[in-house]
Amino acid sequence: MLSKNQLGFLYMFLSICAFSLMDVLVKWSANYPIGQVLFFRGFFGIIFYFFIIPKNRFHNFYQTKRAGLHFLRCFSGLVALIAIFIALRKLPLATVVSISFAAPIFTTILSIFLLNEKVGIFRWLAVVIGFVGILIITEPGFSELNIYYIFPIIFCFGLSYVAITIRQLSTTEPVWLISFYFSLSITLLSFFTIPQGWVMPSLNHLILLSMIGIFGGVANLWLSQSYKYSEVSLVTPLKYLALIFAIIFGYLIWGEIPTIKTLIGSILVIISTLIIFRREIYKKNIITSKTIND
Image: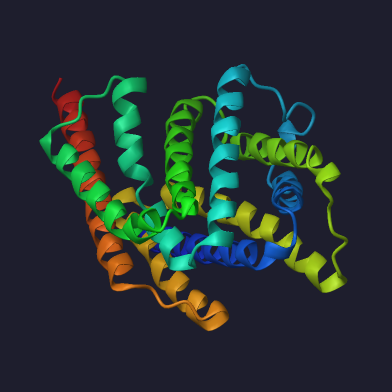
């Protein structure tokens, strides 16, 4: 029998594997229109979530009193998803994953304006370190006017706002409902891209495209389960295994070798996010101890 922390580690590892495989399949699907790939990501995500809706909610599973916030979460999530899909197709896998680690940096900045949070010197230092890391990674792209380097940064902005809206929604909404509405919004958006010309996939490709949605669905569920069973401080550092997977898959499948600048920049971004993360834990512990003492 595994302990709660061990279960948390296992779910986080499985989540990272699923997200990594989804990224590989998205990059592989470059011959299919992005809108068509979005359909498979959304539709098969919806099917997956129907298996985890509690039986007592089947008759009214869609009901919510926070439709506006769900809309904002879905809109920001769609912006992030489209941006990362474009980035995965146009840039090396390890580069995209490295920049995507910077999402907590943007969350810190947005929290100042949207949640009126106070950010201390340590987190500001982390923001600076993270931006230096991003500049090191993207400098070759900007110097060569490769506009595709902007898409992982757009993803970080979108994901940051997603994190803030989920933080607000999760106080009253179940995780599966938040994820369901996002998958539904992906599917509905994809229908508007049909006139751009979808491609009829072969049976093998149909299975692989379907796996994009399945991997995305189970990855989100496993991520939530990881945070449920284990302390966030213990399992979050496992996320950086995604960079190792990206380097391995990128080299074996596409012959991509990350540059020294990419590796140095990714290390700075990882250090930055770890500082932010540790300060969040410290701040939470301080608030908890004050509440207990009061």
